[in-house]
Image 1: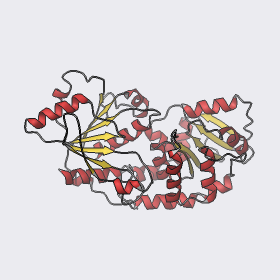
Image 2 (image 1 turned 90 degrees about the vertical axis):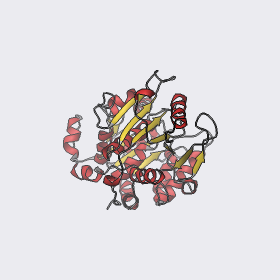
Image 3 (image 1 turned 45 degrees about the vertical axis):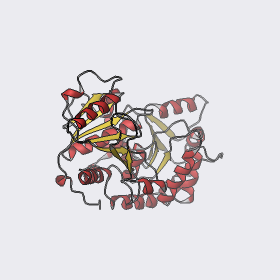
Image 4 (image 1 turned 30 degrees about the vertical axis):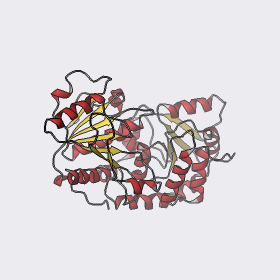
Length: 374
């Protein structure tokens, strides 16, 4: 059972969430889920984002203000004149993934503080990792060392997989939605026959092992592979251009999916290939076997990050091996392990899911932390 939460006890506050898009839209995905979850728990949220257009398909209605208690503000450089003066003062600032709030917002808030106003509870929401430094660094304070808000305190808040971290995003209605989900009509709405054969979802970058994986999986039991729009679809097209024989693998290209529908995709599949941060968390809640394509870093720092996650997951050797192949850490001609091996990963994933469900979620912990600091 999920760890108990008490959203009704949290005071209603105004939150500014700052999101600077780097690439691949994972930052938008995390930030929007956080904003929507805060709003569902009685908070008023403003999402400042420099590239908001992806929300048109990711969260329909968000840009038009149709999501209750969430307002999307275009973070331009510079900010639109008089915008800040027209807004109520925020109680909380959430700086995501190391972005800095707009300089105009910092100057505006500094002037308010000089006039007797309060500083915001300033949260620096960091990247997700299972590495040991996360537990050591979670909730540590830091003093702003330069700029108009010099001397104001901020706190590092680290999502994570253990009770000593900030936890993972998990909406209060997630379990009920998942229980009520029926894959057949959802697949039919996408023009896909539910069928009885295996299904895999493909959301990835450009793994070198992709052509071999598809070709080898095509020699196994018949299966449908549902390919997401964007880099995954482009990688599949590049593989097919090499006269790839996918055999019994049927490749089905999907339209762009809302965040809710991406959850449905994960629930509808027997195996999920995910990438980045947001989809990894959703794969864990889905409880199906998955393979994570971690964001590659030029100095190979992601190798240690992947290893720490697999250690926390208590992944069996076969699942570790596919992760290393999929992420280009080890080369091999044989990639696809077979559906029987995939099925053997389910107990590991479900056990990890249960460990996470026993811990407070990220939003609950943020609400508690902010109440404490105020």
